[in-house]
Length: 122
Image 1 (cartoon, rainbow, N blue to C red):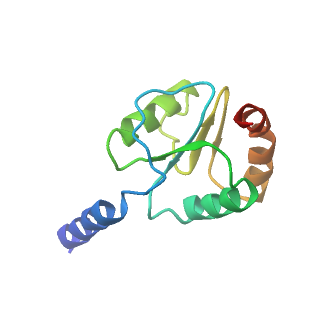
Image 2 (spheres, one colour):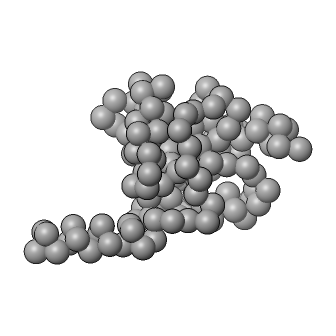
């Protein structure tokens, strides 16, 4: 049963993992927002809906942690902020700040943290 579940999960990742917004990224840049997610994460979907609605023109690197080098970059972000084994999705790397998880409080923090990036996007 576990083998079947893992096979179905891998197939789902393969079929759904190629998002049109997802780009291959190899290093973290201080002047970009990185959004680490995976397709089965409901909090990631909530974050995407919020951001797409409130910031439709925001330039943000969408990184699926199960596609390409996404997991390696995810780990680099975790190391940058000394997150250790407490790393999870959604995870935003925003210059010298990070945001992990999604809630109303994190949405407010995102609104605050995104301000410098809005100014550079214009």
